[in-house]
Image (cartoon, rainbow, N blue to C red):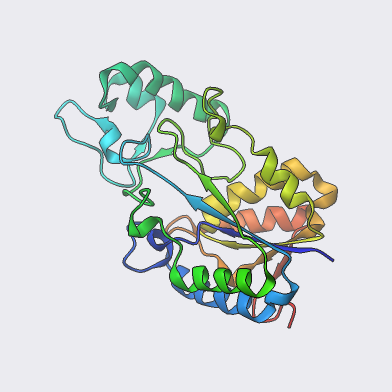
Length: 264
C-alpha cells in the first residue's frame, strides 16, 4: 500500500496569522498536519508539497492594474471583462492592454474563478513564500528518517495567469511550459494507492488541485483520495465554495477523514 501526502500551499502567507493572505483557521490546520506527519511518517511513502510562487507584477496583484485616476485596485476587487473593455481597469503596462481583455474573457469562457485582486502574497524569496515552520520541520524530519526526498512543486510564477491548481494554470500559455498540464506530477501521484490531501485554501488551491487531479485520474481512481478535513480551511467569505467542493467530490468517491483519527 503506497501512501502519498499532497500538501498544498502550506506557506506562511496563508498559514501564519501575520501572513498577507491568512486563511482563518490555517494555523491550527498546520499544527495538526505537522503532528500527523510526525505520527505516521513510517507509513508515508512520498510527500508532494506545492508552493504558490509569485512576483509583484502579476495579473492578480494590485500593481498590475490601474484606473483613470492612476489608482490601483484594492485587494479583493473583482475585475470583469466588461470592466476591462470599458477602461474601468486597464493594465498598468500599456502594451498589455489587449491581452488584459483577452485574459479576463478567457477566464469566463473556461468557467474559471472570476479575476480577483489578491493582497501581495507568496512573493518569491520572501518570508511569506516559505513553508510554515511546523510543516517544513515535519517534512525535513520525514526526509531524514525515511531517507527520501520530498517533491516540491512550484506553481504560479507566470505573470499573466492565476495558478490555483497545481497541475495547470487557469489560462495556460503555450509559450510558458510551467502553465501547461504538469504530466510529471500526474504520473507521480498516480503511483499512490492512497492520496492524502491537506493544505490551503480549501476554497481555492485545494479545490482546484484536487479537481484537476481527479479529472486527470478518472472517476474510477477518486476512491484513492482522502481529504484530511481538519488540515484545510477556506478563505473568509468563500466558505460555501469549500463546502460545495467537498460535497461534490464525496459524490465522486473521495473520502473524508480527520488527521487525529486516520492511521491511528
